[in-house]
Image (cartoon, rainbow, N blue to C red; front, side, top):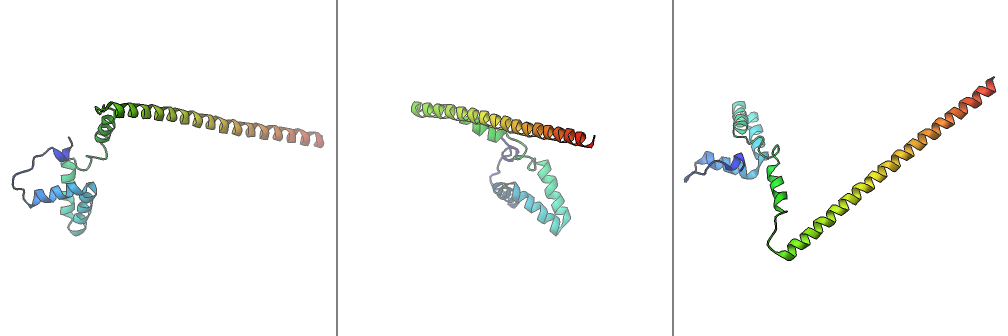
Length: 141
């Protein structure tokens, strides 16, 4: 559970609780917009919004915590109960893993080829510079 869903909803919520629920439904952007507008119109209101967002952990609830997205990824690994779908899912995941390994191997070979080409170019340049220096040295002597 997140900090946003930890508190219980009263039977007859007042305007403050309804406003808080409305801002929660709109997301963190709505809270930030309300705080900025509070600072624009009357700075203590903006400061109150900022203090409340930090105190209630709304400021850091979703962007800093990756648990919810990790849990959604882990739920994809659970069996669904349909054996045909589970077999298809296992085959697809295995194929995707193979493709990922193949792609990473391709990128590794591509980087090695680029590094080799850059090194060969450097060595050719160095040999050319040494040859030019030796030719210039013989001509001046």
